[in-house]
Each structure stands twice: as C-alpha cells, then as structure tokens.
Length: 356
Ligand code: NAD
Ligand code: TYD
Image (tube, rainbow, N blue to C red; front, side):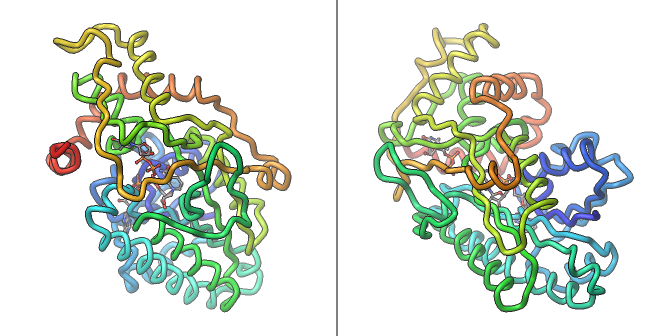
C-alpha cells in the first residue's frame, strides 16, 4: 500500500513511519505542518528510504491536500496530525479547534473527493484510519472499570473535546458518505522522540538538569501507559486487518499513579546516570508538588480485549522494560533533545511552570 500519514514528524507518527519502512513493504507520504511538535529528525533512517516522501502542508489547506492526493494516489490515510498537549489546550484552545476539528473535516472532504474518483476495486481496499485517544471517554471513578468501545463520550479538556469531535466527524463520513473508516482510541504513549512537554520526558530532562520535577496536585492520577512502538504495531495491524466502520481501543494494561512514574524514573536515573547535577543529592529530592491542572482527569484505563480477540494484537513491552529503554534513549540522544528544546520550548516551560 501507499499510505498517506498525517503528523508523521510527531511522536507517534514518526514511530509509525519508522515501523512501516523497516518492517513492511508499504510506502509512505508524510504530510506534516512541522509545528513546534514536529521534528523530521525523529524519522531517522526511514527518511532516506525510496518508499518515503514528505509534503510540508497544513491539513486545513484543502487545495494543498487535493494536490497531494492527485500526485501520490494513496491506498490509505492514517490521520495522526493534531495538537496533542492538554495543558496547551487549556492555555489556548483555538489551535486545537482549528487542527483537530477543522483540519479533520478538511482532510475528510479531500479524502472523499479522491475516494469518489477511484475504481470500485480500489475503493474496496481503501481505508481512512483516524488515530484518537482514550481521553474522549472522560475519566473513571475509583480503581475499577475500564474504557470499552461502548463507553459514552465525556471529554473534559479542550484537547479531548476536540478529539471527540473529530471522532464524530469520522463516524459521520462513514455513515453518511460510505467512507471506509477505522478509528482507534489509545491510552498514554511513552518512548523515544516524545516531546518533552509531556510528563515522562519532562521528568527525565528536568532531573538531569537539576530542575524541579513538577507533580500536579497529589500525584495520585492514574494513566495506562503504552510503549509507542507497541502502539505503532497496533495501528498498522488495524489498518491492514480492521473492519471498516469499527473502533478499536488500544492500551498497555499498565496502570500507574503519576507519582509512582516519577519515582521510578528517578530510580532508573540513579542507576543509569549516577553523576548528579551540582547540588542534587538524589534525583527524587527534586520532586515538587505544584498546583493541579484544571479539570484534571483522575484515572484512564483501557479494555484492549477487542483488538486482542479480533486482530491478535497484544503489547510486547512491559512498563519496566519500556521505561528503562526510554530513559536510556534520552540519555543517549542529547542532539535530538537540543533540537527540540529551543526558544519556543523554553517560552512554554517558563509560561507553564514559572508561575508555580
Ligand atoms: P505530537 O504532538 O507529537 O505530533 C503531532 C504532529 O502533527 C506534529 O508532527 C505536528 O507538526 C503535526 N501537525 C500538527 N498540526 C498540524 C496541521 N494542522 N497540519 C499538519 N500537521 C500538523 O502528537 P502525538 O503524541 O504523536 O499524537 C499523534 C496522534 O495520536 C494525535 O492525533 C493524538 O491525539 C493521538 N494520541 C496520542 C497519544 C499520546 O499519548 N501521545 C495517545 C493516544 C492518541
Ligand atoms: P501528560 O503527559 O500531559 O498526558 P495526559 O494529560 O494526556 O494524560 O500528563 C500525564 C499525567 O501527568 C497527567 O495526569 C498530568 C500529569 N503531569 C504532571 O503531574 N506534571 C507535569 O508537569 C505534566 C506535564 C503532567
């Protein structure tokens, strides 16, 4: 297949493209606007492949998208481009509405125009795969209960509301226009090339720099963590074998409280980077409780039974092995880190954490 991947310079999109190029024979067209979160360095050797092409484009640009469809004639779309950080959505929701809602609508329409011109045989095989989040389900009360594909939508943040809206658009384009869509809703990812505004890379890099490790509220919020390469494998499995019109939840069976995650990173750093920054006796001494995020969801946890039963996908990485690999990756890749922690990143951290 030739697959048009949107957001392929981001954290998960780049993992998907690296997987597609190294583990399959598919070709990729990466459509990315290169926002602060997009970084072509994350593609590594995949970017050198003859099966890879890049189109620098905003997904709200309808004529630009028509040109990409015309020139590349893809067999499938994997839609990952989004504004993805909850805290940024609280400080400035407009970009989230623009890319996640308007952008998804424009992409669906460009896809429909292209799809309607395909032969019946190509239409039969064509897929539009929308990559979404478990945050559309809101949060779970207490330690029991899991999100299934039937859980009603109840998003809490501008980010999750914009993703929920985009999921509804995609389902409507299936029901109304017959576009063969697939939707996946995944739990929190972690791993290499994760932009360091998110919890795990932020903690690793702050600890190494001898800076405060900000824990929101009481640190008792629970997230279900999935190693990004397991997610990439799941996405390709759904694209190749999922039933059009169906939704698949993807998760790691790896629930941890935020404070536990921060403490585990500190322990790994004691082992992997024992030379502390000046004035720091132990990394965990840097843990600092800060004001909670408004509307903070308490617990997310995924029932990934459907994708296991129907598509035989299960995560391969344990949280222990995945977190160790992730910490080691950030220690071994200072150039990548330097490339993304530029002026815009420093402005964001000063804005978000300066006031605490
Ligand atoms: P990311 O923020 O790391 O990357 C987003 C990418 O999209 C960047 O390369 C950016 O340049 C690009 N982009 C943003 N706006 C664009 C636009 N208007 N036009 C074209 N490109 C644009 O995000 P991520 O963490 O890789 O998430 C990818 C997708 O997976 C998102 O849709 C997100 O909602 C979903 N998701 C993320 C997680 C997670 O834990 N990170 C979990 C579940 C689902
Ligand atoms: P994050 O990585 O932003 O992902 P999401 O909000 O999509 O789950 O945050 C993960 C959890 O960590 C979330 O409960 C918020 C919390 N958190 C902190 O405690 N401190 C921080 O500095 C950040 C960025 C997040």
